[in-house]
Length: 263
Image (cartoon, rainbow, N blue to C red; front, top):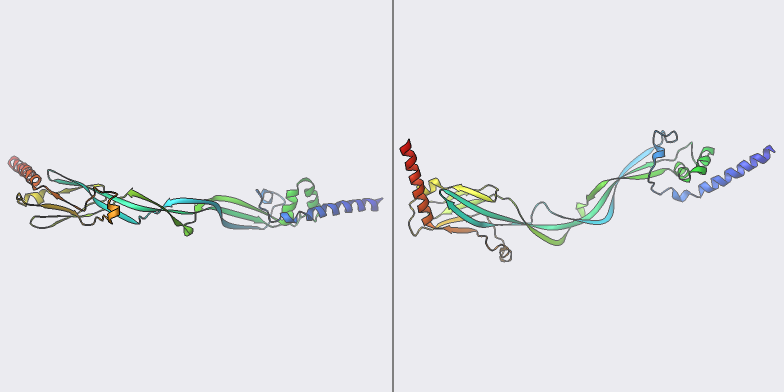
């Protein structure tokens, strides 16, 4: 009778083991969770853990513009003289190329080795298999899970997708005013609207009726003819009416005379 019970048990164990062996094809699968290998689980303690960081393509492509423009079109939009303040509005239009690149998933892959005490070929492992085939497979062949850490664009594989965009940017410029006793050079800041104080410029020059005052943006670039057509109002230089200078000179002179009398 004892031998009969032993034979039944062995037959039962052989059937279980055989069933366990049939699951070898699952050892390479990625599990949703390997929590049973954590140190808080008695069967997961002291199990060897290996961590790898992977990048996988999602099949999507992300479009973006480069930070640095491929070219900048700059020109004077308008010039206004008010008292001794010369106000220049300079437009800076930058051309940006649009790129596309593959989107990547950043993955933290954690692999655990099979546990020696709970494998399929042990009584404990066989009993576990009865209630949870997944645990049996994991404890026998190990377990691997992926944790998503976010996404990024693979810049190394970027390419121009043929789209472009003109956008406003900030840029400083060198302004030259000529037509009088000498050339005057001013450096503007990176604002769209720039003011230049011409008080000394106006007071120290006698402007005749035939005087041409040229305001030139030496650092402006209008690029080629086809691109100039996009912004036809932009100019590299403009001429000011000397009558405006004389009128402002009169105003400034009277202002100085008034201030001196007060003193």
